[in-house]
Length: 497
Image 1 (cartoon, rainbow, N blue to C red):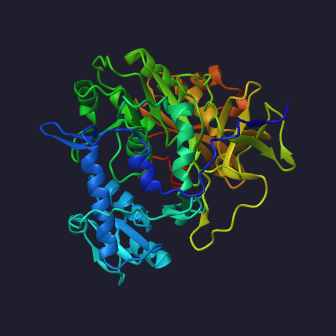
Image 2 (cartoon, rainbow, N blue to C red; image 1 turned 45 degrees about the horizontal axis):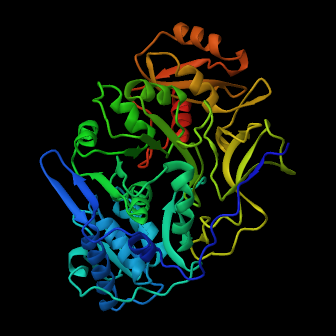
Image 3 (cartoon, one colour; image 1 turned 90 degrees about the vertical axis):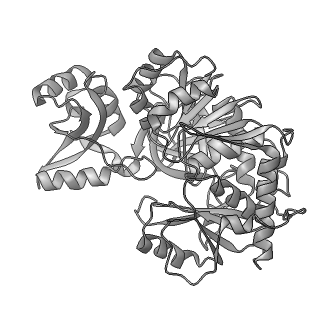
């Protein structure tokens, strides 16, 4: 049986669609319903749907009043505050194209992006590095003073809605252009991953100015008429469990590292919590089981990419079998490909999403040509099991070779993480000599003797998969979104050879 899982069709995308209108007005939430609660240790800030709609439409009018036109690009330099989603949606409501960027980027980094983007305006928050660029500067509080816009931009579902920069596999920034239909496609996650209901209270562990928070933590609950909960700036992550309990969170979302950290301390009972959602990096099976033991709730993982959000996941109605990402979401089509097309189920190949997926990017900055061919490669490797569940085997360029075999780093990492003293693990190539390459395991947790780790590896892995070098670290290098930087570990290997 071929490694193709076609769960289409998805709900038909309307020809005319404005992302901001869909988020704010497709639900039946009344104006006095709570849309957002910003959780701090001593203070709580509450936004109701009426206030959210007013602020977004006032910001949209502020953009129009400033002389900007439909299709203009808005570079967002905003910190961790509710201004971030308001400016993002306000720009889209006015037919502009917002470009959210990480506040952690320095002046030279953001200048490089601005040079690529040529923004028509920059929205600046306090204390955020700005590019060396001549575009007009606008400020969230000034934009929001305008009389609210009454007529949102009449956009097509295929019109550009926003641009997100990603480092890409080459390491350089790439502007990914998404259409308004991206928000429609996110609806397939409501059942395929979230089990999202209008009475849910979704607590996202990330900052406002992270696209994972923007989508999963804010726009998706608002589309459904549910309530979003976000930690106030400066609130320690250790406070999350107690705040989740006090504010009756029904779903918590975040990167796996958040939950790994939380499990270092005793967890309070969370009587309202239904389940947890994770994305952004591979979820170790040991972490899933540890969370289940500590909280008696399930952890559901989703896999995707900047170019298409998520399209493979486990869910409460269809949990992922142990060791897998889950299944193709309803409405989508996924395949695992070899050089000549789909491989057989059970064989290693490249994970791909169908080119017809409405969540798929329009293209890249100044190159919005549609993808060629039936399938779009993700750059990730995997195996589709006979039941359709998909195992993740890492990035294409992360696959290890030993003894003539191709090995997924995650297979080694999952096996080593069954040792109770290890917290995180990353397997990478290690050149002992110009002629000899072995597998090195970088790990955090308790520092152990190499023979202890070698013995553990021998119990759980075939000989050719066993690491030969063990490197203890206080932490593993990650980017701003929490993704493991394997290239940094390989460079560290070279320095210790």
